Image (tube, rainbow, N blue to C red):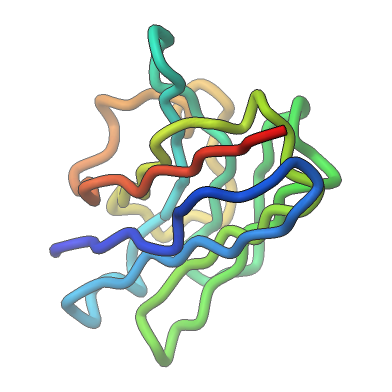
Length: 129
């Protein structure tokens, strides 16, 4: 499965942005999909994830309330809506897929980069003041 992340760009603090992760195959619907981000000089970190059915979402506490993940199964696409962008949101955002038809994944599993079999190329979000 090939994942294509898009939607990044240069935005101002306080703006909103929607990132998209599109997949090449319908088997995408059988994946748990997550967004990770990597800020300059920092480790890649889990931001948000959504179960294969779209029924369960997980969001990192630090961005909860501003980040919303969703998926359109018919379009093989997962979205990350970001509101009230902050300077600290500047990062390359990656989408990743893990084969799982569970509606619940433990925090350890969903945050573990090694569990994800598929990765997109990343889309850069730069937030300016």
